[in-house]
Length: 142
Image (cartoon, rainbow, N blue to C red):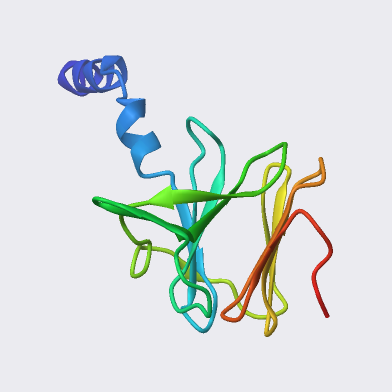
């Protein structure tokens, strides 16, 4: 009985490494077509970033090791924007956000439909992504 209490005491006094748990807390998802892949970073920026894999437009800036044109970001507040990237989210862990489904990360809400992925925040930021076009911070063309 004393040995059992000593083991419980030692087990309870070991600190938990929260940084390891935080590294595994990124939440990712993709559309059913697997053409749009997104990851939310709960640490740091608390932003949602999404890649459009197959797209009708060309990257509009390229440099050694990166480009701009495939990745978009929306934060908890402020406007959505295109950001540079040198990698891809395609094939990362995550679940399928089925058409007609929504998901929220704080003030960011995304909805998936056959017309693409639309993500908004409560301060007016908006990004709509699909294979044919993208729209940032203005009404989605019909």
